Length: 229
Image (tube, rainbow, N blue to C red):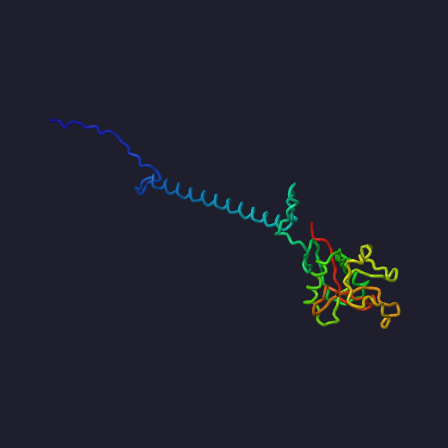
């Protein structure tokens, strides 16, 4: 019997590219997706952190540069923000005013110039409560019994006509002269004693602590100006 001829089909098989090691394609895709998600999360966190730092910096700048504000209300009167200092460094607040107790000894005119250079003037005493405050503060600032402070009272224009530095006349019912003062002694200066200093190291009975003195005598001084609005 003659051998039958068998025809085999020419079949070709193709292998997918990029997967020669037999691993599964979805696994690699999942890894890439995870890495991308992590990068996005890090980017979002970086943006949020930068925004927070910027906001903090702006807040600090505003807190340093923006002046203290007074809350305006119709009733009661304006309320002060107590976080804002009422007086500059070195000045002491009391009764709506700021006081500076100078430790430098100068003549009366020089002391007044110093006060004016700080936008104030030598103190004008308007009531007993203010006198009481000053007498109390000076007791702790006087080194010796004769260590006293200039105030803004003088009769240098006209003898015995006592005027404050704001040109108001001394109220004779509101004076705090020590006994036998003013006496206008001329021992140290032929011009007499035309300026007033104050202070009692051991306290002042009935707040009497004023004494006239030569305006050229070196003394410490008390400056005064209104509190910040």
